[in-house]
Image (cartoon, rainbow, N blue to C red):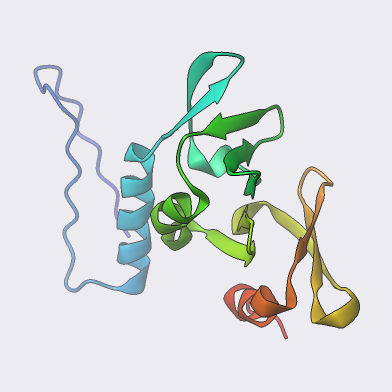
Length: 146
């Protein structure tokens, strides 16, 4: 793959052009990654609005009709419902692991089978989340493990 970057000082807006013989899964992943850059999360913390890259999120959890986004540094709140974030993020390395939680697949460090076919997920910051048995098989499939 060849990458060419042209710096044009008079250009008002950045433009990305992909030239290829055919659209492959690899190119589709590149396109999805670029599009994700435009999809920032608008979150609240201590009365202030923060714009956060979705990939900073470890997981997103819904509790008492409120939705929280957990990162290494903070726990933010969002006005969006869990299902709305799921629709926005699942194609982008996020996966629902229980009725109230979506995890960032890129931030998973370890999986361990738990009782009753559940999975104990250890995130890259050491925090642990339980994937319910309803979602466990699909999670294994998504990560390519048996």
